[in-house]
Image 1 (spheres, helix red, strand yellow):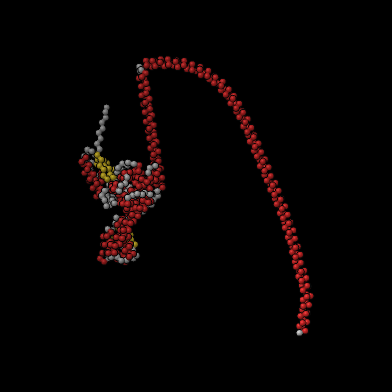
Image 2: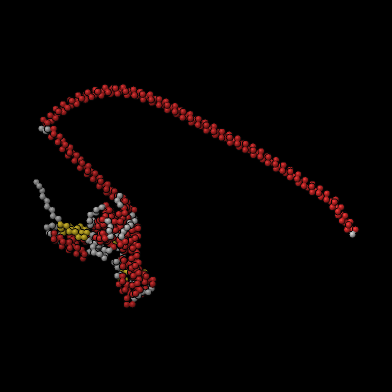
Length: 525
């Protein structure tokens, strides 16, 4: 117990001694930190003051430099303006001096003019006086001269005047005729040149390709065994197909191929599509053949309509009757001398539009006439008459304008063209057909056919001359009027046409024109 008390007393005494010491040490540490902080603060403030002073001096220097620069610029600008004003002043002074000199010169000229006017007035009076006297003298001489001329010539003045006027009139007529002839020659030369330019331009702008068409189609087979299936038992399959399509199937030794032969391209296309469908399907028997032929016919009909619509869109012609559009599509399967009729019509339409644009007529009407000019070829296999007459009837039926109808009727020269549109279509048709590669017929074949036409005509009695024209579409025959009467002409034309039909092969129709002419000439002596 005593020990514990002693320890407690010792602890209390020790605490009483160490507490003041700890407080003193803590205070000393705090005072030291405060002193350091105050020193650091004073240093920061001093640095800030120095920085501020430095920036202040820099700013003042920059301001002084900017002020100096601005003042220099202002002084320079002021000097330039002063110099400019001085130049203006000098120019104004120079102009004033020039004006003063001009004014003085004008005043001197006015004074000279006034003096000249006085002189001219005096001379004018003298001239008038002299002219009056001279006129009187000339009148007297004129009267004497007229009297002398009347005495010498034996003509009065009125008669002489009439003679002079007649002479002048004859001279004027002669000169006018010469001038008109020269102008006509120049106009013809210029017209020929411009026509050639227009045609060349149209040909250059219209580039088209054509593939020679044939009368056969080839269908590829997967193997030669398919030939037997196409023929069928006792040939019933091939007979059904030929009966349904109207096309001949040629199955020969050609490996993996069947040839379809027929002059009607539409039927040939139907047969080709139907046969290809049957080959793919594999089921080949009469009932299936009939089904596939019907489907092929519908596809071809759809193709025909689409081709017609595509042709109208390509050319840019709208508002054509749907039936005419369908007939245009049929022309895709029509050829003339190997030239596809639809492509030919599109090309003629484009050429017509180009030519119409060059000479300033309606481009749309020209394109429409060019597109429809051979529309008769789409059904000329099914109807009697030339493709021209058929085309005219179709255009009338579907309410085409008279200009279009005349262009269709006149594009081979059967009738006279009644508008520039008809002439343009005629030229475009010739350009398209005459282009190298457009038609398959060779020059030798062409010339031989024309020669045969003329030889047949010349072989008849009473024929004087014959001329094959219109690329062999027409033959004109001149007969001797003493040997052939008007009634004989009818029989002669019929006999020549029958012989041409029996001896020649030709596309379309050939017009036979027999011409009988009697001329009587006499001379009045």
